[in-house]
Image (tube, rainbow over the protein chains, first blue to last red):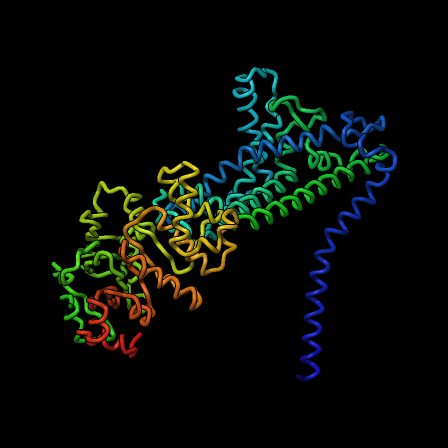
Length: 298
Length: 283
């Protein structure tokens, strides 16, 4: 080879390596950055105070994140409880029952849903979900005073937003289950539902878990749409119809304001660090669960 | 032994087959053999593409029947019509009759699971279900209502023995079936099929993914099993058909060119095309 070609080859190899290294480094840099920025509050308050204290009075130097943490957890949990079963059933219908036409049509609808900006979901929540909860749903359960801006509204809006991503991945996963495997079960005299339940879903279990994890990560960090419907009061929600204040909303609403209050900036950075850590930890655990499932079953 | 369709495409053999206008196909009797499956005027198309054209054939009872022919000639499609797996494909058109034990399985009020239970299927690649070795065998039995643990255990052992797999797996029945070697997996699939007590065993090139020794074991099993079962296998390995088949069906572009007792068809084919295929001129 001529020296020119050798040189080009080396440059190409090194540059792709560098780019890859850089993208891996970004995550590391974000974590370090957030940690350094939130260090002041971590020095002046104990971690358990920050995590388990429910008083949020920055002016009085009280930074209890519990209401935010619980709001985030509740909203995410509600959205997944609604979205996961629907997504699984919908994905099953589309992959196992629907004909090509229906499948193509619904897939494109779902794709459009995925592309809708979150602010539109937020507005949809405000004009539809919030009044519905305050006028119909909450009174029906004896919560006459609910404004409708509640963790339930947040959860519902989130569920719709999580839907397309989760369904998309689940469809991909179900597509990887070989036709011959379905045939093997059918040829033993199993009917379609038995085959789906006992063979297809079982084979697809790791992938379906992965889809749920991705949905979770999206739901946990989603900011704008939830912020618009969840009410944003820093109290621990006592029921589905109470308002809450998830971590992403706290950061988005307050960053850049009230920065004169000591440690406020640092507290918001701590919120971001917390959010990131939870998502990371959850991803790692999920990955381990998936690997285990794969080892056991596939 | 030849079917009436076979005469019409002699003119332009082997480039294409002329569409045949045969309304009623005459099936040559099996020479005293009792048919287990009878196919009458079966036409299968996928969109505008015709996959099977006017197929009429009798499959002898308790013999090994091999369906041979080049790839894409409709062998697997024909095999899959026997247990109605073909209809799970989207947009497929089926016209004609397939009689199993005299019952038209494409009749209106036929319950498909009961038809499928009559047949065990071995696919090209062994497809163990995503569960343990034990559960793979017990799967079909459980579906058909056997719940008692002791009975299940007894039957699982019985069928694993029948497929000559018991000794190799008896200490790890509750391990995932996918941990087995591919040859063991295919024997597992055989045992799993036998466990629903079928009458017929269908094999879709069941040895094509296996090593020679595992292939030989499956072939030996088939020969052993034909005492009690009708075995139908698709194969593109002519030597395999020669070794174990009692009866051979030769297909070309969706039609049956010739069928008959194995030795007769292989040594004295009546059709030019069969002769060429058997000699290896066309494949």
